[in-house]
Image (cartoon, rainbow, N blue to C red):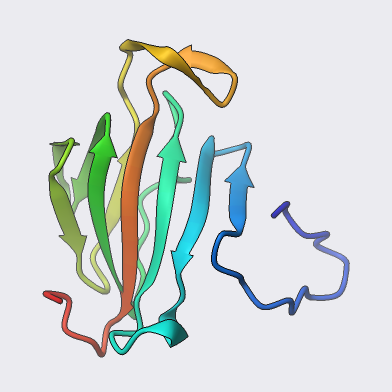
Length: 138
């Protein structure tokens, strides 16, 4: 999926499982694994790959969404309510609705495989979102 024309009509095409979203500015790539209307928890799930130096646009919050990050490979630096920590492979963090947070891939390690054309280690994370009306522990 590319960024839409800001002056064009809205793209109302339904999101599909397996769809790939790439953001060249933030250096992240997401593969849609699960959609909220396909499970009773209302969960949307994606596998996120973030190249070295990748980060979201800054500290932000989601008023009605709970996010859960589980690191599959690499490290994720997470700032959650003013506290910075590093999540490593197999570790998770839950960001409750309304919580200020930021994340980035600060790794500098080389790896053998090419990630997005760069021979640098990429972060791979499993990202889940839930409506704030659902129990985030599920």
